[in-house]
Length: 339
Ligand code: WQD
Image 1 (tube, rainbow, N blue to C red):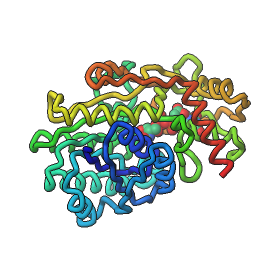
Image 2: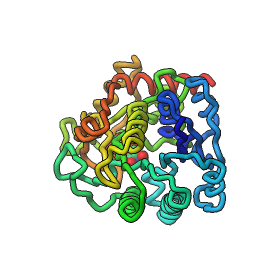
Image 3: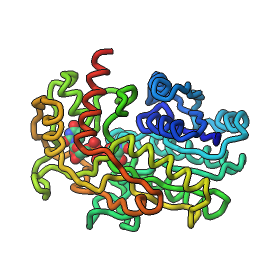
Image 4: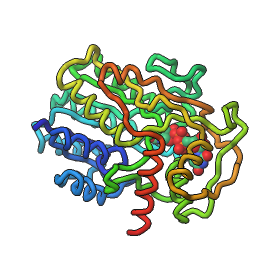
């Protein structure tokens, strides 16, 4: 079996990707220092797949420790790099922490790929790199705008570092630009486990509905959209996970036409915050307690993906609907609440 190193394997998207990789015949190991994740999620991965994934609790900013993982696994054929801090608001308060963590860890993992000749590299990027787009839906050729946050800037810088490295070495890479990953695995064995008060919409909805939060806020209803609230492209985390398996297969079968290729991972459907809330209420039977609050600094007004390239080149075809996303997120929140 082909062995893949997944950095951030104990994270939300990382764990769902471990499941998809295992179910498609890959052998996987994880490296995750659990600074923002819970290793217990690997128990859920094991319940789904029957495989206990080994996690190295190592800080990727420690090059020597990272190298030891590659030395221990000379049969690695690829890396999927998720590990990074990703809270937009926190990045505004602590930019240097974000630059150090997200960029040093990337440079170290790229150094190891070069030293140990691991040439297939899949990177977790974000639609944040587009900023506030002039035209929607956005394609991979849409112009990048100045990042709205240090988090977004680390994603833009990381993409440039990877592109330049791939041009100069044997590295073959895909940059996967996620739109808004939401929901939980249909088995309800793994899902999102936000630390502290959730910044993202869907965990804020489900935690309010379960009573963990007294009320949630809709950040603005005076935007130029169909109902005044911001518009986003929500995509199920299991669809996102499967795109990583397809991207790896694409690189391993040497179908790539350039050293670095970019793919949008979105559903191609835009929904407003209020529409997401209405869908959640319909699916859950709950009436959500929310208020309309001021706009949130840094928020993009409206963005959604043109996903044709991932469809045609990777053969990716997302299957989950917004109702599925709300249903699986709600099931997971109820399970967390029981434990
Ligand atoms: C979505 C919409 C909020 C919470 C960011 C990053 C992106 C990715 C996902 C890491 C916005 C509104 C939210 C709430 C609300 N991060 N909202 N009340 O900002 O689109 O994307 O997180 O991978 O890279 O940019 O996602 O879920 O935070 O917000 O009204 O309590 O929901 O204003 O319009 P966002 P989000």
